[in-house]
Length: 255
Ligand code: PGA
Image (cartoon, rainbow, N blue to C red):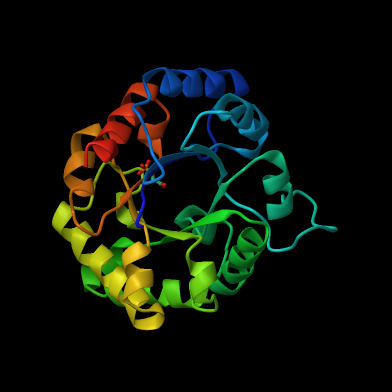
């Protein structure tokens, strides 16, 4: 069954004390979740052990990470593997975020290997796609996102695909305060679902959670999440304050 998910992407923010307070605040106000209404907290690597401990025994709220490397172990100074994340208690890993693609030059070939690492170590992968403003202005966003999904995911079989969540994040909406309208989000999410259906069949497409990301906040979350093909959100800035993040979680739970 398709799950609704709200995932926090803390990016490179928060000290251990700040992260602890934030998770405490979220847990204090958390509504009832379920297998089909989940929350993920993707903290920086330094806070993972603490976040895992805080979420221990709390149902349907899962620790996540924001990246992993494309190999299991070895001489890769500064990198962290999916094996290490799993060992630390992580259950979700974000891969292919536009900031990774742009600032760290992560291309589709590397991302496909990272996806394999995440899946073979038993992690759920939140695979990000999304177009820059010039592509949106040219009106070719559907083809752009389709290409990213083909290159990053289409080597997987149908069973592997059940452990993938797709996050659509238009780059022009990330951290800018400019959100895609619900009509824009719905249109491209429906396209993404069609792309999955063509390759993997209607059931796989129907079961795929497709999250929206980009300046999602309590004031627009309910409208975005009400779209039939928007199954929750990947949240940056608004995930750094417990009241805002809880507002977004409540918008998801209320759907
Ligand atoms: P934002 O970031 O919510 O701050 O726009 C979203 C993301 O990059 O995941």
